[in-house]
Image: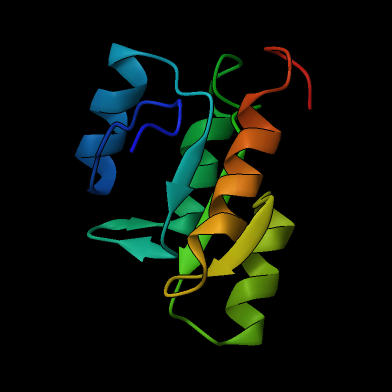
Length: 105
């Protein structure tokens, strides 16, 4: 099934560094913590470079901790979605964020 977007897989700090060096993604979909990469580290890395600081981030998680959710939102997550939720919800957000002109939020 073609949804009209490419996917790059990267896990942890090393994977993130590699992905951001090889190309600039238009969107990052992540868990609150993946391998050695926390949401805090992700946003710190993204904000450290002018080319990456405006990349939107969707968090898809099984975590139900409201404090962790609020922390992710405060750091810049566009939306937090349940990991085992409906695909249409994620698809709607992906298209809303990726179908916009490059450089605008």
